[in-house]
Length: 203
Image (cartoon, rainbow, N blue to C red):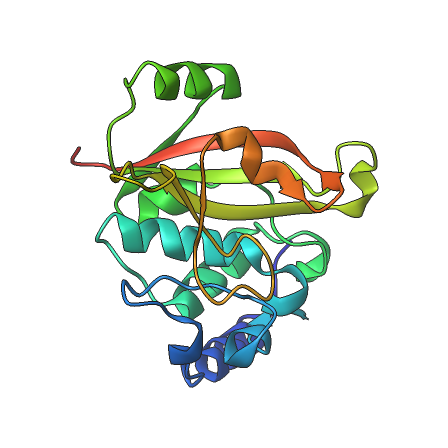
């Protein structure tokens, strides 16, 4: 879905002026797409609060890989690249490889079963970065998708999975003991659509 270049530039310039410091943690990661200045950023003809989770996820993944890009730039490139669905009102297509390669990263699909197995056997590389695309409710897929970034970060005394921007009002990251626990949302449980491991191209 493509946009008028002039309006894309206007949205980009407006987004660049937003102060995202209330949404950033000490590592520069963004959380809480539904609060503070992050919520009001334009995502196509919509807003980050409503449908911008994919852009926040890509931003956070790049931040973890130490190849950061401004969120405004990620959003602009999603507009230009035709990633947005319904002009941004329905988020973005959850296929990020061409966009990631533009920034010096690459991705590969990872089956959930393999991810769980490798984690249980201690075979996952500490610091591995992932993009998770989930159905919000496995019994009612029409409730939509949510995409977020996370890492396998085993630390003594802490759950090994650290997830950023899991929920719209989050003020920090969340840790989970199992990758399947990430799907829990109160009484509701989601389901994974796709999981990507993301690495620097030089890795």
